[in-house]
Image 1: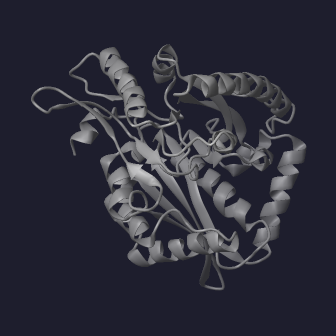
Image 2 (image 1 turned 60 degrees about the horizontal axis):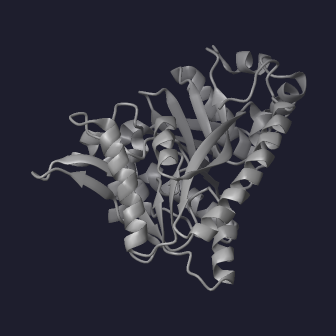
Image 3 (image 1 turned 180 degrees about the vertical axis):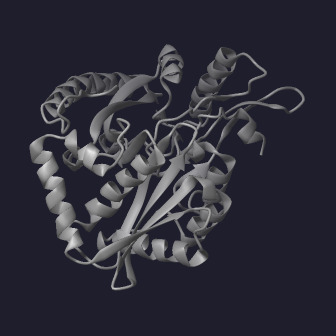
Length: 371
């Protein structure tokens, strides 16, 4: 539990000991998952924890949301191993947050320097290909850049609360085209006589979590994939961090048919849309359950930001705005490092053009892309 002493009040629920440890004890990371737990710690001579970095040795690039498959392929074409690589990130969770955790009793800059230097040493001593730090805070990016990490841009889509009193006031802020589209989608779902249960984590039952997991698992299966989380993990998270969870369940003819999950951070007034799933297909139900019901919840609870997750330009049509986030990368081999640097320079230019293009399709009557 010393881990939590390193967390500032605004560090968010995903960095908490409860969250990360639950992933470990339920086998979602570790074992043969390709996520070897290797958290980097800085301790003093009395074994007091002064700093830490959430860290994994990865045997693949799944569950990261910053895509480096082309880099891995380049290594393979040159008969060199790209995996394992070192990854500082929250597994399966593309959210910005601290990655260089520092105790309040020591000099922050010194410990940050030590952590980044230690990460590079771990890579070289273990003959790993690279180190990657995903979605760190802006002040951490400066330290990473200083020690030779290259930055990479990515875009997510976030909804922001302009002190709306209700959903209709939010709609009034949208362009006519977007407003009509949302009303049409909501009406299409309403024609199926669906009602919604909003269940705070504090009162969610084991049966509620079991139903959510059934939906979550089914959606992965329909996409011919396997879920990252186990039902045991979901049940333990719900029991161990109830204040950070909110379930929304869609019910048709008194039978639950779909569910979505929000992770809520009251301190930063942020809600994170994490997972959704259904056991019955209803057109537009995904938009209603994962976006519109969540926005209504945020308005009611006066939550200021709703992060809709990685990717998904379609979110803009539902009132979300593009936001630029960054990751940092260090490649041990000098030749590959130079190649990646050139790649990132070209990609940065392309990303800037992409963001400019997104600005032409902002759903609000007056707004701009946020960095």
